[in-house]
Length: 418
Image (cartoon, rainbow, N blue to C red; front, side, top):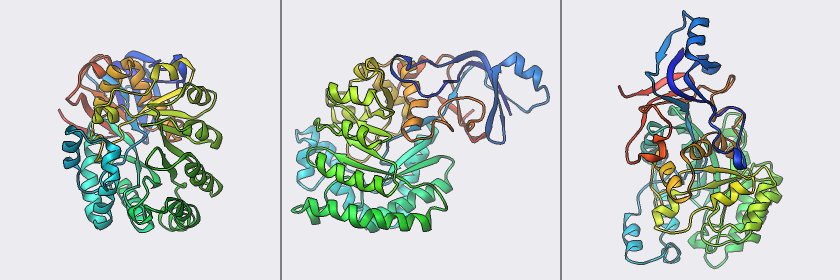
């Protein structure tokens, strides 16, 4: 298939973008892209590609933007139930940590997810994933973390693997057994850390090798935060995971700066996520490494907080910055990547071009897939969006609607609205 007559073909060629390079979109006006066998074969101007491939099946972009599919590198999309009552409690003045201390928050969703069947978990989660896909997310990282026991964590992983096979998207699984301390270990959090390191992670490898059909190991993540896991506890968990061969991620600095980002650099993690209260020293450590700082602007927005990731400092120090939705039932139930871009532009002062790069090629790096997806270059997967607009600057400027007209996944038209 030859997609032609794009007003702006956003290629993002050249790999992940750090520092001041963030936002180099590689725009080809009146662009075209040739797709064969689910991969991008040629990229260039419309006239040249039509002349070179006159007999190719064509898709007319009709003078609209064509860009890579969004890559969402941080979601908690697999759960059951909701926490609308907690939303009302927050509006009445309670903090997230106060709700967590009362057995709400993550622990509320843990209870519901433990009691759900695999089919119920998949059915509710599939609706959210389909909404994300229709809004342009073609690759989505999905975490466990609403089980906090091995049985339910594996049930969540099974649902992620099943939904990856059943849906049009690509899902990237992450094991987040260290999302919170379960109630049964409330008085012995170090005992739960021991359980993760000595039992859950080794058993996860055995289960994965039998269940995941030769896939590489999932990421292992930990919520390093006041009220969750300390810096020392987080380091124990991630070090144990690294010894077993798992790739690493970490939640850091959502509420307090504990030094988790620098620790993540030392351990060779792929990303440090949230990064709201991150110190200048941590930002400099990140900038000297290959680690991607993943900002989740929907979360402070959902919590009505004033502090957002220090994007300008990360960029100014020559670091990698990505953005993600953090889709979850407690702090930010948002399924539209375009809305995340709108928030990032307003509160983190990213330009639309910077936000697009952060949500595509840099987000792909955050999940270790930047050689396969995140840009429109020969040899990469043909995961593309045709927008209903002629200028990419409309992304971020407009919000509350869906500007994605067509989703193309692995070279196949999956969602076509007109």
